Length: 82
Image: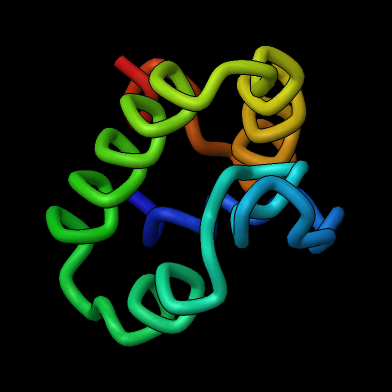
């Protein structure tokens, strides 16, 4: 399987108390994800991020956008998103 791509969906506007309005990551989380080398850690990070999005709300658009990103890279979204 390919390396899990960043959950960033190229919106990058940090307006919700430091969280991006596109993916919910903070700047620190973006840096952390880039430092993760093992795919299992990257997948765990994406799972943590989806839980964070659920707590914060207003991120239903992300699943579709990230799914498209995964499909373009020939990664089955269910492999990453569950």
